[in-house]
Length: 110
Image (tube, rainbow, N blue to C red; front, side, top):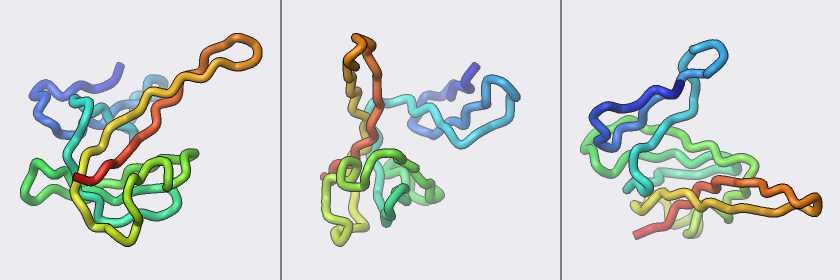
């Protein structure tokens, strides 16, 4: 069962692997949108800070298999910048009639 943040105050809560019970790199984010500062980006991850805390640590948001242009809605040369991190819920129906759901992270500068 995923770990929940009882305070629900915007902190990232580590999730445990359901099979082995060891904390992994996935997190549960209690809000639909987080205000963050993106420090830099490469081909498969954004380096970010939570915008609500004065001295938070840096975390990496891995977004594979999505390309950087899909996730980052500003030119990489504009970094560092503050903005909103959200998730777009994309559903695709296959030729066999099966619906596949993708959660795509998106950073939009303010």
